[in-house]
Image (cartoon, rainbow, N blue to C red; front, side, top):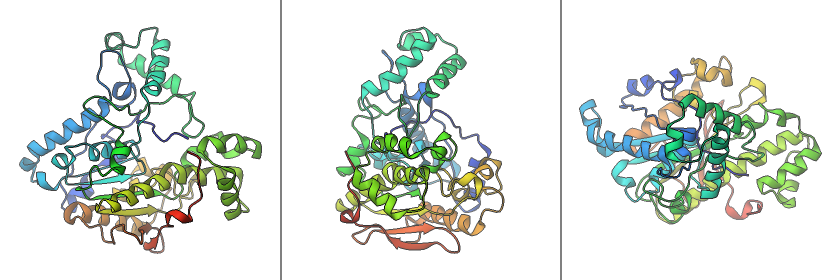
Length: 376
């Protein structure tokens, strides 16, 4: 299982990402774009690495220089992102100049683990082969952008976030990502910057319930589970805790923990050891749509307080609980303004704020010795 995928689609122009609710509640909201897919993550001869991260850093430097003119405080900048956006936030946090770029960070549903240069070259070369050009900056610059996207999409059809295959990754090296950002964070980078991080309870249902994986057999499950790093002990524990679950349900539960919950727990533990302030949450409300439950990205409409947006109702369905949106949006605003979202920071007791109905509650996460052992 490889959780190092970089974004290949998305834009700040999506109607659901409107900053009006944040502005309504006293936050100066800035939405940035960065290059995605091949434009932001291709490994090309003659081109810098990790251009997506370079775009984010450039945008934050602009914010530092200009936000005062919009009524903002450059000393109170909070960055936040979900999925690949969370990866970008983590990359910023891992930089030596993190405290110069932001005062706080929110990471939703991803940690910024890097891949190898060989992994980055693999997908770049596959795209180049489809285009019939060499994998160089000069050759790609001569190709019309829509053709690069078409070739990229064709290559990505052969990959799966759960099943593996070629994908865009962060590659350590160069100015933007000088070292593995997750390794840097675990070693204490960014410890002076308070953060909030969290996951959705059923992250991987997005990639199970919307694909043929929802119909996997026991035999197919046996082939996929080791790709997640699931040992025989892991499989036994997950099956034992879910005696009536289908193979797809068990796969989704294991992948959700392996991809998101576990690494975020590890990151929170490491930050606590370095004296850093970290607030942890879980989104647990279950959508009735297509068996998605609390799938990856389900929390976005709640965070933005935009449950009426078509960008989000396709996942939540109509009538999603406004109470959960009130709770989440209030927490994001409070963290941006005061540095405290409204619950205890992570410590040896490992508090997690769970957003759900009928009420959001504070729980305690399992300790390290209570977890099952995954393969490396």
